[in-house]
Length: 299
Ligand SMILES: NC(=O)c1ccc[n+]([C@@H]2O[C@H](COP(=O)([O-])OP(=O)(O)OC[C@H]3O[C@@H](n4cnc5c(N)ncnc54)[C@H](OP(=O)(O)O)[C@@H]3O)[C@@H](O)[C@H]2O)c1
Image: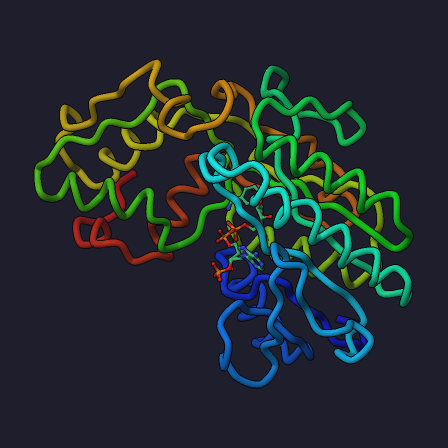
């Protein structure tokens, strides 16, 4: 990734941690921030909520990727002021300091800057968030993109090989316990590895402006659970979809029927394309080595 050193803000998180491992595997020089004192060398303490970090000029970095966030809708809804300090004020200040030093910043954002009424949202569509989380991410995007050398990467639901959602369902189904996935909550899953490949590509080429990556289409969480049950050879009757409860469960705004984003820029410029949702789930199950594999991945 060029000749510089990358600062990953939020190196203990899901995306940040995966990015750090990928960069390390490629011997890319990096620092990854933490909130845990004494985490060791190469782990600067950065607390976006408290507005505390070492002066960037002392860190000798050539690019910054802000992965840290209060990323749960419910947490933002419950503490809008505290979460705004982490999601908006901290990142905007950090990016401004970086811009003053000529250091490019990439900020991770979300499909939740939109209202979920339209599929394949264009990067240029006006932001129309419906939740505290989406409102904060939209505000941070606007503040950061107003600075030079900045980029935003919007993501739909990111899934990983040890995806807790799948692991939890699989464990229940194996025990013969029912699972109750939502019919009114949608996802267009994107594997964390492809998200990190896109981050690397954007940083490497000094990309600016808005980038987006999502799966090509939405399915419901109920579709996902049923697919998993079929792959496991489990009793499909144990999957008992529920409707009308997603909003209360996720704690933020009405559920979004559409979470897809127009991802043609990452396809055209970075050569990254996200497979369909069931292919992504199968790949996560395969890579994760969930016990579902004990029974084989059927057709
Ligand atoms: N995961 C998804 O499906 C998804 C979808 C769309 C967009 N995104 C966006 O992608 C980014 C990464 O998400 P993620 O799933 O990797 O999130 P995550 O696993 O929840 O990780 C968030 C990280 O932020 C750190 N953090 C929280 N408060 C902080 C603070 N005050 N100062 C510094 N760091 C703080 C956490 O630190 P600790 O480890 O110390 O708690 C954690 O390492 C976020 O911007 C999120 O909004 C994620």
